[in-house]
Image (cartoon, rainbow, N blue to C red; front, side, top):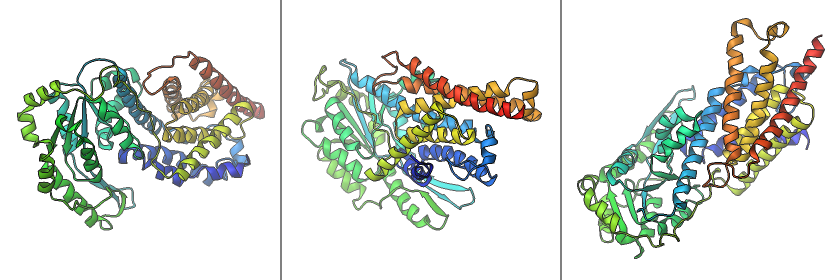
Length: 479
């Protein structure tokens, strides 16, 4: 593979666009911040005459060692952390789906909250959103007091990670926190209907919160219209929320072009059916309540749940859903993303088996590999990339930390801060990387083969040796 071919395979615009089609605006922002930090360092290196591209260093670039400007710990921990949160939610939900017991299972279906965001183009953004679904979802577990399953929604990832982000560097605590919450399953936007159909026959009861009149919400209700399920459905019909969301779509359309460029929007137009028409139709088939009626009659709802039974019996209903975390893009774009991942992996592997031409560009290649593999939900490959990144940080720390002649390599006033950057980036990369590398199948929380340590050591040692050689070569050149 030529350098030009490798460079062409890294399409930064596609990477940014693809992250918009993962799991909503919040997750996109985390990927955008991480990608922007990598691009900012690469652009600075280009402007400083250090490179002419991702794989084309200049003589000046080859002389440079580590570019500390490229080490953005916050961007790294937040993009890895939010992906780990989604993975852990899905993993724990699969574990519950696999568990054989007679506990009643309730599937919670709902229309998601709407979001829109606009930017003036000068780093300022403003947004509009609804919170009705999020509020009802937060109240529901305590009301039901029954095992609850739901599909992970974009807005909930945003609100839930306010707490979860404190556990990004302590995944055992994050796991314990997630286990206390409803089981949340990730479904790819391309295949979400398939996932819902897999869940329905395994559930005893269904709570459907209707807060918007959309094609997806009506499709879910249509599936439950079947005689096997309709007597086990409770529809919570929120006319106020429906009105708010319809108004937001109107407002969103009116504001486009006035507040600035639209950077996020809910596609679609206000519904053609009125809330009253939809409710009347649903009431002919299902038990329909308002949110206030649902709360007032919660004891009756619980009794209904306890008297309901899933289509599949215990011993038949246990299952798992694949973790299909990747952008909901066209097949051609998905193949391009996979090709990028493969190209970057080859560049990183080349640095582990041969000399590193430019350490600052090698770091960028590893960072981009972390980014792309996270985007594709390839957590084993992300673990490998984080291992290489950790090795670079470890080798760099060994070079810069000793006092004496090498102390001059770092400015005295910022020496402690720069060494701390190496420690934080390397420490988190090792912690998260080992856990990602260890994950087995979708319902497993640890590696069952015992090969992780050997794999980690092999990647780490090979990378460290190559980076050590870069520092040693520089040391010889100055003697």
